[in-house]
Length: 245
Image (cartoon, rainbow, N blue to C red):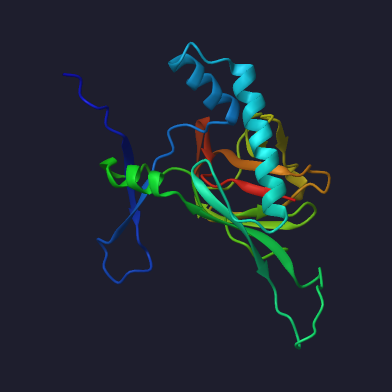
């Protein structure tokens, strides 16, 4: 009898520096790959040869368009692995206040589906100990909106905090790149717009021309410590998807 394949994730441990205990750690799931919609369609077609990739892609685009229009008109929509609805940010002064785009904004609320939550409960977790003490980004703050690990504002500043994130070395690969998730297009941040370049903090300006979309951030460097450079560059891909509107 065939056994059901178990879902497995790897967790690495990091120092919990805000704790009084010296042996307290926090865990972080290791991202094994970053998949686009096209990747998912390819995987589905490989698993089911009766599926047509063009038909799948067309159906997905149609459903996405319908869902987006309904959400934009106030509906709460269950789509794919979650639920989506709109949320209002900002304060209103007085009972008859009007919408002020300089203060108020709409944001999308998301919640995972019961099916996804149930699957996650059964995931096998492999804790493989302390993480390699290499480059890591802990937080990204968009200075314009104040949002953490969520968005980028074209022309605005961004603060990265982490460990060994100073960008140094002679490799052409070194630097910060913003990777658009649908097209895979990479935008390199010019080093002259990197305002702070320290081992634990990097501040840069998002290009004003950056198109709207969903992005991931990668940082490549040869930094090891204050007196040592790595022979080969090391790249860290930030886990969060960052919205550019």
